Image 1 (cartoon, rainbow, N blue to C red):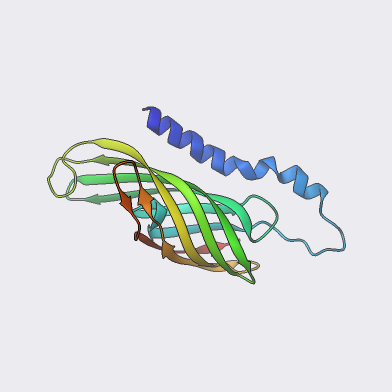
Image 2: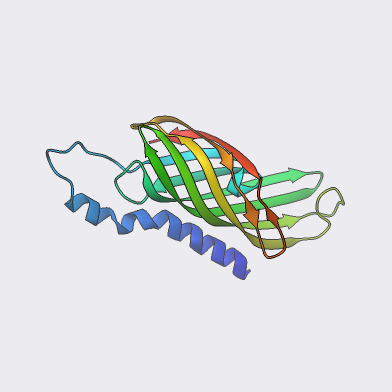
Length: 173
């Protein structure tokens, strides 16, 4: 129960961080400079930091298209009575310009498994694992289709899987 509470608290924190900087960014805007809004994305991801199939929200923390940001998501997968629920949370940094970026990220994913078959899981467990992201991201300057592909190493104190990959499709606004 403590892990679920921690995951929900982190999810809500990640979503509310942009509001902490809202007043700062509104005071620094100039009437002569073009208005730049912070990039926000919604996307579905196969693999990656969510491990399975996830729906995600990603946002920059400042009124920039690149720089520091975060993401939160939720995923679910079921086969033959075995179920996996994942909640990925991470911080990331985008390097690049003109809609083409390299994403570096570090986060954690809460995993809850249940099942009674011996196909995947034979007991109910929950765990938190570490994740990283090394992705190429195409994200339009204004709004539109976005795409990510790359490596997402996963780790815990028991294992390290360096070549776990991911692919995502979404919309930037």
